Image 1 (cartoon, rainbow, N blue to C red):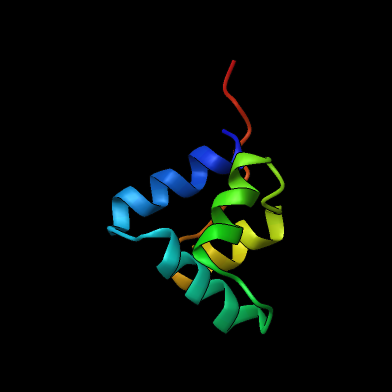
Image 2 (tube, rainbow, N blue to C red):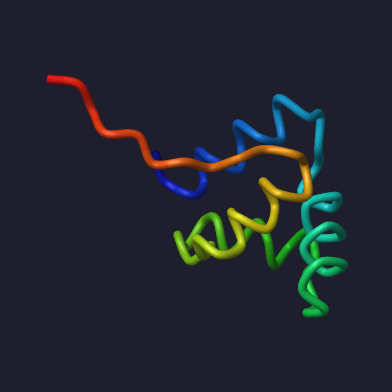
Length: 70
């Protein structure tokens, strides 16, 4: 799953807008995020894994690695 799909799924499950995602990331990181910057990062596929972990943590999700069963 790419970062864009990941964020879209989280937004759909939690009824979030990109504006709210930007607010969460700004609050947790101290960096400046806007709705447009989040949208641009997703469009350019430059949304970082660390940002995904921060967002998931803020929404009370755990991201785990699970080995595929063969």
